[in-house]
Image (cartoon, rainbow, N blue to C red; front, side):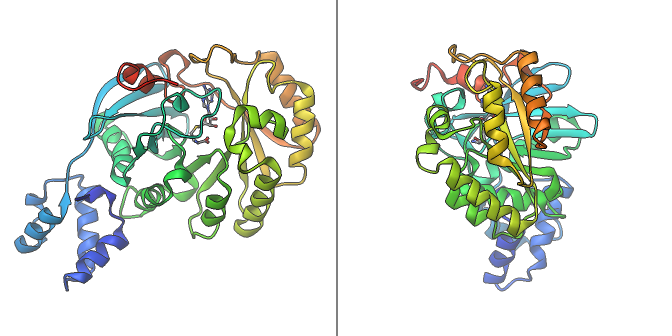
Length: 345
Ligand code: SAH
């Protein structure tokens, strides 16, 4: 049975039309779910009893549960239990411009990036759309605060769960849904080229971030197995088309790994790859994990890397560090929780 929070407004409209009902019923459902935040269909007084009875047969109205919270000053991390007992995490970050939430898109991840905690636990399944929507609803309810931006940068590769993720984006972006502006939604991918091509044809003005993390194919092959399938040249060609087509700037994420990818020659190499493209580079201080072979770069090294990119006229920022005290690196909390349950790679 489908969960009601997995339905986009369009899908609900089709549902009502197929029952010979008016499509504005979908709008009324959205008002109950997202404006009044009421999932008790018995109380949906403007929807006829017979229709409610039918809907109860066709949809479930349940949500995952938050079972653990860890927090420091600016960050709060939640461990969620799904209905089949699997665990995922979501992170709330407080910025001066508002709250953002980092959502997970899969249970585990198959991309196998060498430095990433999420990839130690193989993908078990996709998240359903409602399991992503509820990450936001549950946090808003618990904190009694609104979330103004969403980054799809938690556990999982969003473009490996394309359809559910796109429906999630449609629901949170819908003015009658959670109403988060497309410019405040960022999808981060390790670079699944065919899906990036699909994404550029959708009329969604969301931000795209690419986990790049290396300045040549040899290095990227070692850090990110996906590069063996879609290498840097192919990825950059696709990104150029994306930029031409959408007129949008792309974020290039570059996690700074001590003595692995943080030398000045890496910065020079990266600059020449990105020359002339409408991108900006976000340097990410590595959040140290159980992958003991990877350490964070020194502040000094990050600054030198930054300067070299600047000197080459590449737009660049250094990401503020969030939550390093509370195991906020992708997958850390979940990996602690499930290390007994599933085998860790
Ligand atoms: N699969 C998607 C989104 C999830 S990862 C992607 O690859 O983009 C979100 C970002 O965090 C990616 O850029 C990832 O490479 C990075 N990341 C993973 N582990 C990290 C760590 N320990 N410290 C800092 N960044 C990390």
